[in-house]
Length: 340
Image (tube, rainbow, N blue to C red):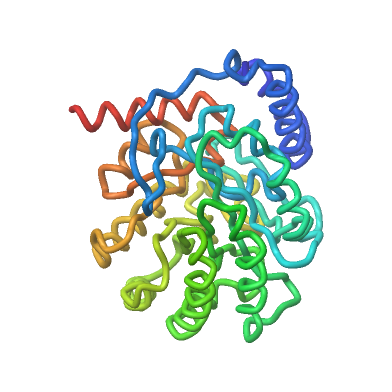
């Protein structure tokens, strides 16, 4: 089905096509056609930070920023879906155009800038969801006009608002599209932020346990990763997501969009995302569960991340080029690698 739609979608502006895809998916779900549109992923039970999953393949944040399509996304076969990034107040994000397809490279560049309707709107949308067949993650961030000295206040506000509605929460400090955000990955800033969030999480968890993940960039050097590993050793989060998009451009000189600002994702990100995943795991071992994300355009890529030590994987840009069949393909590849 997606193969038939893709030429039409690729003829549109990338951001418009993004919204049209979500609307088509929602219409198919409401018409009861989701199971006919995509192959069903097999069961491959696993556990992630104490959360039971039907299989280890989920959706990364960014596709559904406001939590408007939760039921339809689960109907595609994901075992967990992450929505957001959401900020305390609504914000428009960066000027358009801000989303670009690099078709020959199976890649995407985006500079959205945390465009979203604000945390209160997201919570209302989550409350309306009626068919959450897996675990729901909510990805939180800070508003663009909040300086880093006050960033913790934004994250704390979002954590308090979403805690009762999420199965896990992700702290996004690694998007390249909010000026200064990645500075929060520096050791002292990271320790202070995550410690404050941990204190609130533990208070909120007295009624219901909600694990907290932190999402890191693929552009960290060895010293950065050493520092992050030291912070993680202090029991400030329940898991890590590796990785976000990259500011690097592992692209041929002939690619006309290579100089567009923003985060690069898709196939060219895979080597760098895997290198960061491997480097992180070499530092933390099995101390924390890690979700591998970045560059998965084939099922075998998902299996590679699992073989490296990830406990689950997430898809996003690969779906642009492959469609939802990539979900079941990834689960099959992971299952096959386990029995090989």
